[in-house]
Structures are given as structure tokens and as C-alpha cells.
Image (tube, rainbow, N blue to C red):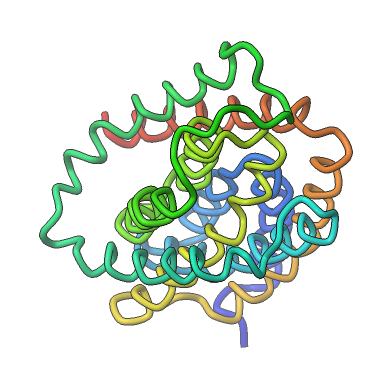
Length: 252
């Protein structure tokens, strides 16, 4: 039934758990799962598609966990989540006409900038701060822009949502993390819809990894709610910097 042998499946399930844990706190779970999927024989596009399949479970679990902790209202996020889903589909469909190579060239430096921002920006904690963009404008601009990027390429989507919520919406670090998850779930789901037409995801393997993602995301969200920015900020810096290194390595 599974697309891989049971020993490889065990490795992928373990990767899914740790990816769900990391992703629930700071994003960047794909740094774990995509290389492992490639290592066990997945083609690049099938690995990315399978990563989206398993990733939706972790994002959904994290969103529900933060909602239960009172960090976010999922009902109030229905409209932006719908926008995120639609924009991700559009982004994937526009891959042949947008300057993907240019985006890949700039992306590592953006990730380094995000890492430096969260590492050295004073006063970044769980307290809200001045809002620089109204809710409707944020929903009409930043949400579709970042979600379309997720459909187009994907790496660092959670970090981009995070920095937008912190710098423009004025959210504290923990609140920003909580609000990121449903939007990331929706953009992942949109990418799955698009990938299903151009790739062959490992559906059964992805579902097994998704079960592990649920467990990992539950643990990660619980830790983030308990400790807040003290665990979110360091992990966000590490994942952003790691993603920049990986992108540069792939490039050169």
C-alpha cells in the first residue's frame, strides 16, 4: 500500500514528527522532510508534493492547538484562510510566467534578513505593539502575496507570515505564530490542489507522515504556548538561517 518500504517509512514518520514539532513553533519543517524524501528516492517535484500532503496535518493541528489555548480565533480567520488557499493555487499556476529564478536568487538573503531581525531586534516579545497596517489591508495584500509565493516556491512561507504579522499587524511573537498556522494550512492545501495536476504525491506515505506531524505539532504548540517567545525566537532564527544555507548550497 505504501510507496516505500517499511524501514524507509519508519524514517519518514520520524522526520514527520520532528518537522511537525519545529513547524508548530517557528515554521521550517520542510527543512527536515524534503531532504529526507529526496534521500529515500523521491523526485524533486514528488518530494515537494508529498511534503505538502503531510504538512497540512501539522499546520492544522498547530492551528487547532493555538485556538484551544485562546491564542487565535479560527472563525475570524476563515476569510483570510480562503484568500490564502486561492492565492496559493494561483501562484502554482503562474510558475511558468513569474521570474522564479530571480526569486530563488533573492530568497536566501531574505531568509538571512529575517534571522537577523528576530535575533537582534530589541523588544520582540509576546506583547502586541503598534499596528502599521489595518486588518483589511493586511488581508488583501500580505496574505495573498505570501500564499501565492507558497504555491510558487514554498520555502520560508511560515517565516514570511511571521514577520508580516509582527512588523505590520503589530502582533507579539506568540500571537503571530498562532495566527500563521491556519493561513499556512490553507496555502499548503492550495499547493496540494495544484501539485495534484502536475506531480504524483506519495499519498499513503504522506498520510502516515501526517499522523506523525499531528503528534509533533501538538507537542510543539504546547511548548510554544507555555514558553512563548523564549523558544519561538531562537528556533525561528535557526530555521531561517538554516534555510538560507540550504538554498545557497542548492544554488552553488
